Length: 151
Image 1 (cartoon, helix red, strand yellow):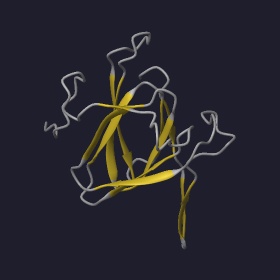
Image 2 (cartoon, rainbow, N blue to C red; image 1 turned 180 degrees about the vertical axis):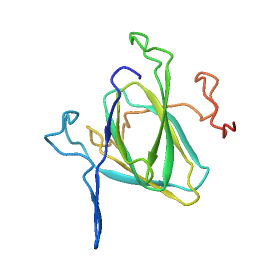
Image 3 (spheres, rainbow, N blue to C red; image 1 turned 90 degrees about the vertical axis):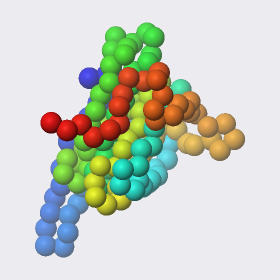
């Protein structure tokens, strides 16, 4: 696992009214601080990648559909430099993933319907000076192929 990445299996509590899933609590081991909470969606097959944050740490959970969340460690001082991690998260595998700062990440909607992703980053989004560096999803700088792997 990439250094600094943490995961937490989410517990789903169903009853006759529906279900409840706690995503993060301030007393969780991996909680650091609260910046903001937002939701983003992806249509089937859409890839949102690559980017990293210099200061911000992301806490990502997919609450509807499924995504393939991928990270690449390009940090020169990291013991896991060059590693790629994949996580398949969402309705069929409820999980919260902590994405350290300076680690490239992105995701692809792999469900047949739109996915909904919730992110609780440690920092507020700065509209005038966003804390992010971007590369295209197919950048040769990142050794990853987003295509479906058969077999």
